[in-house]
Every structure is written in C-alpha cells, then in structure tokens.
Image (cartoon, rainbow, N blue to C red; front, side, top):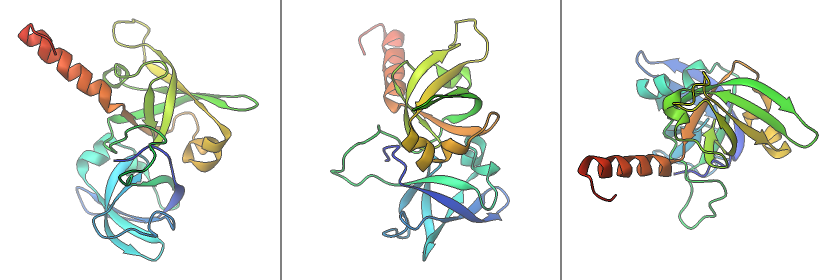
Length: 211
C-alpha cells in the first residue's frame, strides 16, 4: 500500500524484453537504500516487486496486464519515473490510500499555468470517470492529487470525459508531472473506497435489501 506522496524521481537504466513481459532496471538511490528482494516499490503509480537490487538500482518485472493497463510499456531508457516505497505501518498517511493497481491511463489535454499553480486537464475513459468526484482523490502517475472538476461523466452527454487537477510548485518540481505535455499518457488509479461503495450498492439493489 502507498500514499501517493512521491519520494524521488528515478531513472530508467535498462529495459529487457521478455516476450510477454519486460524487466525494468530503475535507478532510485533513496527507495533502494533499504530495499530488499520481494519489496514493493511504486513506479509511476504501479506496484512492482523488487527482483534484484544493486547499489542505487533495482530490477522489477512488469507482466502483460500491467503493460496493458499502464504507460510502463511506453518507457524508454533515460525516462524519469515517480518512485515511492510501500508505506510502513504506523506512518502518516500524507496522501490517500493507493494500492498501486492501475485502473487505466489518461491523456493530458492541456495545461493552464498560473503564478502559484498549474491546472492540468486529463481525458479518460467513462468507466474510470464515474469514480471521480469534485474534491475527491485520484492518483496520477503515482502522485496523490485532489480532483478540481469532473466533466463528461456517463449520462452527461458532453462527449469525452475529462477531469482537472491543480499542481502546486512542489508537485511540478518533485514529480514527473511538471514535464508532461499535451498528448502524454499518464497512469490513473481511482479511490478504492468508490469501488467498494459501488459494489455494495449494486448488491443491495440485486437483493432488494440494504447494503
């Protein structure tokens, strides 16, 4: 489990093609400082397992499901990635509950700069948009953010769904989101609580009882 508070920007050192999967070698001095075999590290919001660690780098395998649902397959050697170690028990939950299980990807539509922040609009599929609410939480490339606005949810008839987030200077400087441009794909994970609510309400409707 993670919090969506990026600890450092790592760098892709190597990518090995394994046929139906890939193996990433990632440089991240901070996150590997106390990492061991089998530990979990979030890479652009995707929970990956450390298969090997040496010096300031670690290896992790990315299976087909993750390649299909995330932007990890788009990475090339030299790309920057957001890194976060799994949250230890008893630590402060600075962001929100993040599982590292990507729900899909979104696409940067545009960026509107301001003196003290920058508003970014992201297009996404309707089956993900339904879980977003104004002032709710969303994870974008492993970064916990607050939703400013959601437009074009199912039944709205407004076309392509999108949502917006405001990025403060710290986020712009310390995560890869500061360098994203319109057209770039980003990994999205919605708040898991929304999924549980949907599941419980659906069961209640089927049985005619209370959730």
